[in-house]
Image (cartoon, rainbow over all chains, first blue to last red; front, top):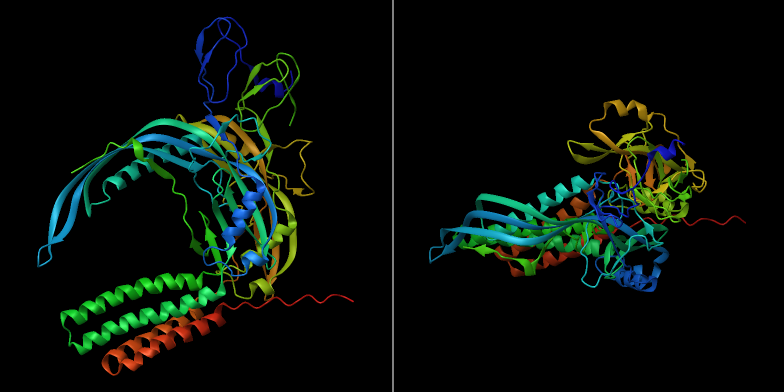
Length: 343
Length: 256
């Protein structure tokens, strides 16, 4: 027997010696010959589900071309970008469905009456919801994808039925399971404390229902613009552009600098001017405070657009650039399974 | 890596990376693969070609953190396509599956100390695997130097070769290094020529000052001074345009 053969163990029924059929992730096996049931004590693995790619290449290309025209991207992107390659791929995700329960006690502050008096109202929330957590089961690399939402129309297929490139799992199952439980508990507490200004007590629990390894389809497209290579990814079922990098627009960068600088200066100036003219009355000081806060917010927002607007980042991407679009969160609630209680 | 045979019928057995069960396509026997004592060799193929790697590098040089003229002035002096080795261990530690990586080769290359295996299509690395002309860097650290010290019991261990482009470039007489992950396109660098934010701050500061003066004077002296806010906007936009304007790379002159 060669070295390689030593690591192969033929699966036979311990009672009758017949061959048994079992698959990855199963921990109970029924022998079809003698009907005895036995438990597998192998390393557990995980149940795998793969979803069928329903978006074709043309649709993915069309979606990315439409995406070129959105947000503060280079104005001539739609005209001059050349899509150099487009290929489908499956990415692995750990997916935990669990009931998240949380008890949160705290205080909501309200201002009532003529003199704007602060009133503290004690609040209590019991959260009892179903949540889905998903995280990518390999390094995210430069793909900008960290999580998925599986649409209702997604069609599950057998794991082996595909010829598409499938990225391998490189993260730990148990680590993902623990992280999912933590994230769901945290979200349950956040959902409970949404209306509270102060939280005095919180306790949370997570009751796992299902944990699977999901292979989800995407298109990845690479395109060039002025000799630089950028990319975008498209959801293989919903056809939404999930992530991508794109060149920014110099015109909107400089406009941001002008608007942000002049408006924030104007806001502070208005406050200072009024404060001096009204000789420090409440109105003047009020306008100054409001103007100052507005100026800080405006400056921060527009400076970011000006300074980092050379490159637009969509999705969960690292590096300097202007974040645009929305990033899929790792935890989503299932709304029709909620039994919350608020007091 | 040696080929596997079905223990029942002797036919060739397809063993996919990352699976523990293999079903013989001839006799249907299910075989459990005990990976705990073997070392598997895996490879992540390149999904980015050299042209795209250069394009990704160029995109990175044009990023907002990099020196403004880096895109036009950086000269790639060396571009190597290679497979870099890392040991990946899957072990049961205190009843939990734990995955971690250890270096298989000492290196100073940017990003390679993080020991992250980039996302990719994991294939078995054997005589049949195609390396696409890339150099396969051989490990200089043996797995035996890790095994005795590792906690827990093994599930499997593998030597994973992942694809990288090693780029050396020059900018203003100094040499720099960058690594591009040949699977997902992530760019790793240690030190690189960066861009100062002072010009950006100065431009917005000027627009701010004009807006501030316009408002104060507009309230206190004469509303006509509010015009300064608009002047601030245009002055800011104009100067900002200069700050973000890119130097177009010199057109290549065709050799006659």
